[in-house]
Length: 233
Image 1 (cartoon, one colour):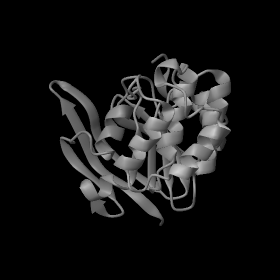
Image 2 (image 1 turned 60 degrees about the vertical axis):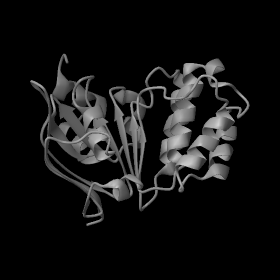
Image 3 (image 1 turned 90 degrees about the horizontal axis):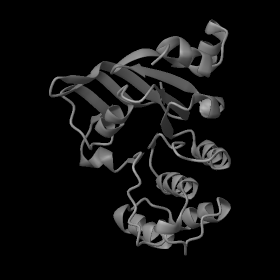
């Protein structure tokens, strides 16, 4: 088994709210996972715990059979939903910031990607459309040379054409020793690239498995399965 990440009995409580409840998952290398669910289902909380930004209440997360630590964090690239760029920066300044921050950041690859997706390094962040910001965030996250990439709602606020570019970027970035986790509730646009599915509902795993096997067993698309799992959520 080519396992990269193992999550065992993971729970997270915020005051009186149960954000995650006894989550158990195993992620294998070479696959793109869809972390699917409506807003508030626990997707972001789960990603932030794996990224080392939040601490779980109980349970364990293992990366390459090692508990999360500053060493494992270095092997994870996490893209949050928020726009975390300074408006006064130019795109090239953000690339330099990433290069200074992460030893594994591939500057040449980043600039090549920006050229392909038509994001000018001389543009000021304040002048970028939401579509360009979305493409920039994904390009930077995928320009790191790590084993685990987590993209939280990469299609949010992004126009249709930019969504296609982002989906292509994700597809081209997956390799046999890498795992990509994409959190989204925009299922129809991204289901064609997903190898495995994780449906998160009210902080618990409602359904998980191979994408094609789930399609065949339920005789419907991933979007159809989503509607079955979440109903009117």
